[in-house]
Length: 457
Image (cartoon, rainbow, N blue to C red):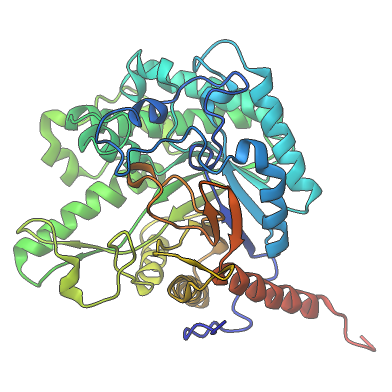
C-alpha cells in the first residue's frame, strides 16, 4: 500500500484530539419495518419513481440492524476513539410523538453499550434527516408543532442514553433538510417551495435551541451541539457579478445558520433578498436559537464556486474530482476553519464528516483505493494546519465506516473505508482503512510517548 503524498506533521495533534468514523441510521441500518419501526420520510421518498438514481431504498442497506456487533468490531479494529451514529426517530417513537417503542430504544441501548465495551466513545446525533412520516403528514418541519415534538424526542432519548454518550448533536446539516428537501425537492420529502424551505430552516434552528435548553434543564452531562455542512464559497471570476453571487451563496449556505447560532440574528442581506419568503419569527425565537454550544461540528467535502452565469462547470478548475463530481480541494477546509474562528466566537470544532466517493473494485480480496487514501490524508493535513494557526480543533471523524445508501444516489456512490457487497453483506477493509488504522497507531504511539515520565524527573 502506497503512502499518500501529503505529509502530516507527526506532532500536529494534541493528546486529547478525538479520532473517529461516522455513520447514520437510515444509510446503514435496514430493518425498515422490524422491531416496531414506522416509516420515515426517506422510506416514503424512496418509493417515488425517479427519486433515487438506482431505484433503490433503505429497507436492508448494510443490514447493520442485525450486524451491528460485527460492524463495531471492525470499528474497534481500526483503533479509533469515537463512533458517530444517529438515532432513527421512527424506530424509537413511531408516530413522532406520544408512545415510545421499547424495542427501538433497546436496540440503541445495546448499540451504545456495545461501543463502550469496545472502548469506542459514542457520539449521538438525534436528527440525520429521517423524520417520522407521521409528523410529515401533519406538516413536518414546516409546522411549528414539530419543533416541540423534537424537543420531547430529544429529552426522551437523552433520558435513556444520555448517561453513556459523550455528546449529543441535535441536527445534522439543516441546510440539506431545508434546501434540498423543501426548496429543490431532490431529497426527502421532495418539496419545492422556497418560502416553506426557509421556514423549515428556522424551525430546525429553533428546535435545536429549545432542545439544548431542555437537555440542560434535565441535567444532561453530554456535550451538546449541532453539525452544519459548510464550504468556502469562491467567485468564479473577479467580475463584480460573480463576487456578488459568491457573497449571496455564502449567505444562504453558511451565514444563514452561523449568524443566528452565534450572533442571534439572520443575515440582513439574505432577509432582504427573500422578502416575503423570509421565515415567520416569533418573539424570543432568536434568543432561543443562540444557546451556548459545547461544540460545533462541520461536514466538509469540497469548496463551492459561484458564477452569476449559472451553475459553474467544475471541470474548469482542472482539479481532480470524486465520483460525486466534487472537486478535491483540501485547502478549502483550512480556509473554512480559519474563517469560522475569525468571524464567530466558536466553541471547540469537530470535523464530523469528511471523505470521498470513488469507484471501488474488489480484486483478490482487496480494494486499492489510493485516491481515497490521498483524499483523507490531505484533509487531515488541512486540519493540522488549522490547528497550527490556532483554530480550536477537537476531533476528526471520517465519512464513512461503511459503503452505504447514499441518499438520492442510491448504492452507486461508495464513501466507505470498508467495502460492502450489498448482495452478500460481505465487508472488506479497503486500503484507506488500513492506512487510517496505521495512522491512528502512530497517533497512539505519540500519545503514549507524551505521557511517559522522563527518568529522574
